[in-house]
Length: 518
View 1 (cartoon, rainbow, N blue to C red):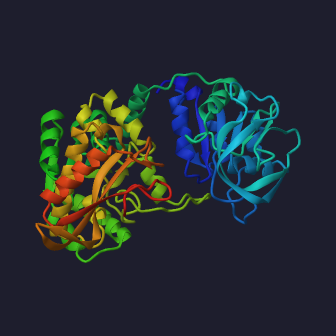
View 2: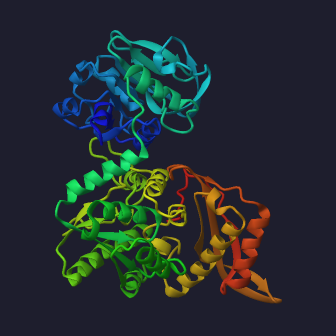
View 3: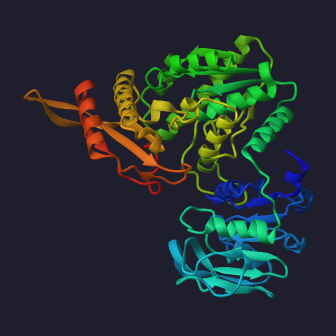
């Protein structure tokens, strides 16, 4: 990280929005360095941060609620450009003696933005541009010195600013893909208002991450939770570049892996990267603890707790003084798992390497990818020379096939799912669709249906197929795969996988569904 990068950075204060990391991601795409910090960040720390601009994120709270997260009023007296988004705009209005009221009609989803007054924020933005709204409050009275610069059919005040104080507010979310010209708006804030430079490159992120790992670990030794997927692979290589032989990777066979996964991981990391790799077969332990468990959250918690337990036991067996555990946790895992203190976001599901961790651990966590999205992790991997066959892999959940076997997890049901999943991946690759979708996989449903095979009645299992398109995993749409391909996959599964007589295709989007079924 160069001094120039530090001098031109943006501070994002997080009020608990599901979209906060999207802001950082969009800013990085503009090649500007930024950091996310809690909205409780003390003003003295804000001043020391020496930001070129400050962004106040959205959040699920209302400024009218008792105990809602606020900010120091002196934040707006620092002569640093400030952009408030959704809750952030309502917050600045409230703090600066404007008036906020509950809206008679809440506004969620797409809206048409009408620009009513000149603003540097909207330079190059078309009138009647599509924006994404998500709010239940409205501004009833502007603070002194502010003007309205845009409106929508349901929001007479959709954008405000005090250009002299360089304070700006947007009722909509420019950071999400549904806002057609959101990137232009953010670029205008970064370059026309804050005076930032385009000097943040993926290579800088590699250097920055390595420096942070070295600073965190010091002379300590690190175990890395290796799964063979994109996230843990990139995390392992990154940590290895930072500390070399002080890293030992441990691959745990948890009994809920895909077909041939263990052998593939061993070959890849011992042969390609020459990283210390210790393989532990704990499949019997995991399956014993999952016996009879059908609740998805309990599955995730059991797997998360057992992972850490096995890691700590293996560290003791190795006889090394390990003090850190490295994981490939990504930001979508974090924001779906953790309620934000001061601006609580909704907990959607626990991830085995976030919400499923025990409260007390002997090993401290190192999560170098925690603030990144999947596409950024792939770019980071390519920058470090990791082969495309690894960085281009589709995401695979940490709890593995345990959350794709809906209901009880047994070895018999796992074998059925493995066989079906193998066929789906083979045919997606053969049909040229594998790299066009975000994820494609099989799910074993907890039901049986009647069928006919060889003139005989059958009563067997149902496989659900899921394939989605996405850019970051935060939102997703079902993949419109060719009918011939779907038909071929279905025929192969029914003909080749014993115990299956029906295949269905999931056409749900995220939201309201999640990508995984559990």
